[in-house]
Length: 182
Length: 162
Image (cartoon, rainbow over all chains, first blue to last red; front, side, top):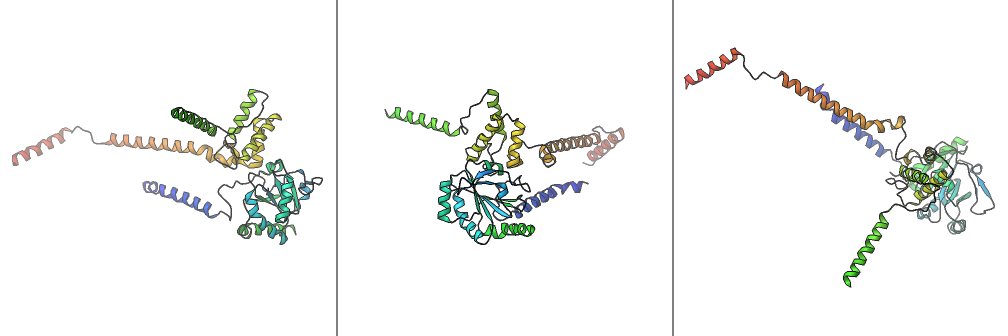
């Protein structure tokens, strides 16, 4: 009994160390400490009715987002979005469906950006006052949501999608949703 | 003159410092003092998602300002405090609560400290009891007559040997 008590601190230490190590090792590529789990996972994309960036007479709703697809939150004021943009262009060229949410931005700037840097988005939603962003729980662009064929959010990625993040994390998730839809 | 200028500089500096330590300032119009108090109470209880060590009332981050506006809008709509916090949790997750909800996942968080406190009290009680028992079972300070006799004999014997 006494001997068992003596090794108790060591046991507690080992349990804690194992716990911390496993959380350290399980971090996926590009996932930072700061990242919060989204409460919207496996829930339908929030409903909205907003104008298109390219033509403010056209309204876009959640029914227009046909998954599997990426929904990318971006803005012209977002420096990191500029870094991410060439990667999105390449993915779009490879056939990945990408929708844009132009978050707290104005459409004139956005149209100029798309003209200058190429437009990888099939649709671009103008979320000028950030309402849709708030419903999505966006707290900093760029953020990217993966939606499935039923329009449910299946994954949320916060930060810049670069080649490494795509290859090691998002590509497989997107592919799985494509296969699921078939 | 120079002295007066330096006083002025000091005063200006202090003024600037005051400006930098005060919380984020918005201009909201409240219909009542009570509503204002509720606004600040909710703002203090919600964590800013971008700057996780600040609540949304203190943070200067754009997202915190957006959330303050949203809290104000919801208050204006006549929602209850609970509804407003739930609204934020539905979008930003449990993380935005500085005061976590009591459920199975947060049971350890809520009652862990109490458990450790009780464990500590128990440990102290056990230690003190054991010490008392050891003290009680210690040999009595006084010797029995036989023991005293034996001790005297030994001492006498020793003094004769010297």
